[in-house]
Image (tube, rainbow, N blue to C red; front, side, top):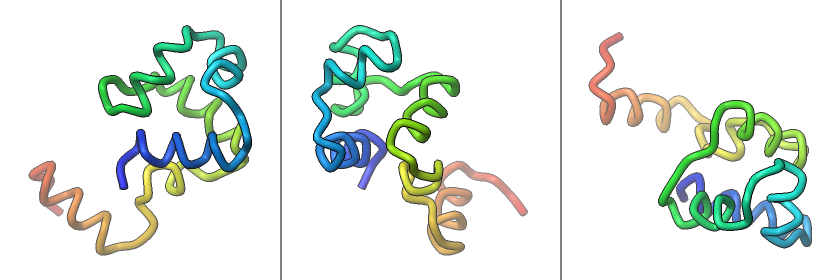
Length: 81
């Protein structure tokens, strides 16, 4: 699952509309839509506010919750140990 899919899932689980999330973050509704569709990514500040809004750790939103996933990302990003 990708960030946008996770964001949409968290928003729906919290019974919030895109407009409600947009209002909380002080962004336009299309911004939330773009994030959920993978067309754009939030700023670090907005990402932190999303974590607070949904009361989740950043790893849960990004789904980087184990060593195997972290290693896979390192390989994809060509990061050497």
